[in-house]
Length: 567
Image: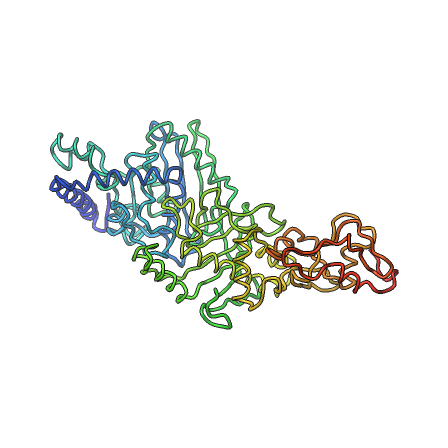
């Protein structure tokens, strides 16, 4: 191991690591009644089981958070090498900031993250324990604090350590019986033990520009199968894993199989602002308590392109929510240290209309059953279960974030309605096409009153057919025209005649956009007489708000010579 002054720095790093572990072991030996080691061991193993199946996502999150917040070109490399070790070895490398002593201490302590709430993804200090599902003694190799190329020995010549094995405990304690007792009682992942040699694959990853590598020797065939399964899930996920990882530009997923072949998937992310968009400043303008909305385009390469509406919350609104939650015991006081901005995001796939609801994220996807309320993906700094697979929507912080999401969607729709292009027109509908039901409808209805000062049914968010213009009307006025052949006239002809016909190309979303205020519908096969009137039995009224019936507009607008309409 090399350092700034050669072997001297290497010896200093090793002394720090060993001295820390020896001090912890002395403190452990002095607690014969309270026995915190046994208690922490139980909690540590329990938390690792709670994170079952999440180890690769947790390591990816740590790799993302290692990059500074202003980076968008960060890199993470995941490599499963089946040719190394009896059951294979998993590597996760990142090009962010190398380990300093503070990071060493924090990774060794349970629930003691060095990240403030709001700074990156993770802050619980528990997620790294998820690796215990597949490995007994994880290893960490990191560059010196000055980064790659600054030391005489090449890369990863800073802290190099594994977590103490039974043999390492014998070296540290110098007593076989005491070491055996420590192995049974002491919590895992608490005692760093210095490592001198750099594994060849770590050197290979360092040469690619990575500054920290986590190396996991897989414990069993079951662990190997779990690593293969999670790697394949990440590569072929229905929910794009890179969508909200704004510090990363690339993620490599590589699998070196036992027969010598290599499978590799490169995931990419590039973000750019939408032309003509003018981002707002939080807490200013006509709606000072509403999120300041910006819209960006995110290109994920083969995983598709997304339009993303991003709402930045005013700081006072976030603080008031945190104060309330801490006061009632829903959050601990560490949440009051939140200094970063809080943002909610709704991401809509461009191109064809999405066929199903998306997923909730807290930067990375939550559990597969936690669906977003719209046909797109939603990201926010939710307060989740410990393993980040689910959340309580009634929690004060989460409830405020869902309110802000509804406001962001309405404001983004307003912005997209003002931008040219069919893609923006489609996004303006899809972003407010939430699931039907009291919860979603109530959120949108309340948000409409806050940001538009009117009922949801009075917001012009339904695209209609109108000759020569991209027109919009309210759910209260719009009508759905029947699909297929229509005996009297087509939807396009009806639109040209001035009837507020919802755009058939966004029919499903236009219907869903009327959450709680269903659009009036003209029934297929309706008879239209010479005066343009539709029989009462051929009209289906809107419900439950019962806005103006389609037939009334039909009768009024079609009072003209029959030959004037062509459909």
